[in-house]
Image (cartoon, rainbow, N blue to C red; front, top):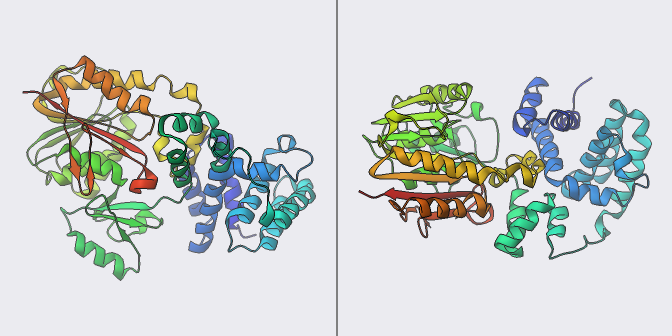
Length: 440
């Protein structure tokens, strides 16, 4: 029996639910395992990610037509109902009849075949009423945003308080849109214009990135299948993280420390900007992650990068005032990359409460490694003030020998030495970057 896109999406949902696995490696691994063709692979990924991004919204409307209550259902049955509901509520190109019948067939192929009748009844009623569904209650509230965009209510409340309702809604809506693949041309090996022509010859469409030079935006696909992967003609990095490196202004001959480097994108961006001249010490807490940096640097042909296992909170005497630039992309809640990693929604407020203290400890240690006149570049992939501007304020109050320095990258300009990236404004991850210059 052949495996369909819906079977693969269901298996991926079950693995994430049972194992707490990351979404991207799960769906990519299953697509390769079952050797899905391009069309089926795209549908499997769309269904899987769509359910992860919209589960609470789907549950709200499924609950209107399931008299037993969703909490009483077996988790696999609920996954199947969510897959069907997502197709009915979000995918106009899939006929409603097919969405219902395929969900029933999926249920019969699973270990929950006895629930096929329930799945059929609930999805048929949702299908019949999908064009006149009642409005979600509470528009204008954090509770409404939590249900409409399927985010934990503690997070919708936090962003509403910090940024206001309108920005919060725009942010959460953008986080449910498909994320483009940001490809940065390795200009040490090939001019950007020549690589663009290589994509066109391969009939791969792209868009120019408005905020990051030599960056091309693609609509998904396998990275390893793109032209020039083995030859090291490009690397993948979100434009916001790339802009943060460019804002730090690494130059040929500098000595740079990338203190929390894995998987290596910031080190690669700095090395290309430095024309592979100078030294970049790429550190991470876990030795096994350093292999990703080494293999990436080898593929890209970068010789100025060396790696080391280091805890960014612990002082290393030989690093004292040894670097022109220290890049500190610190551990954070990751709430800015939810559109790429929807499983981050599972995080609870108490899980991230201690992060600002860790971030400040890292900065208080890394400051010692910056030469007089050098730069400490702080960044996170989150949008919460407690991990961003509040951390910088605390650090500045303790360290008057550092001062914020404004920067410009492409069309972007900082204020007070910092820039906040938003997916609905900049088309990037939610991200924060702050540039601090040590006084001579």
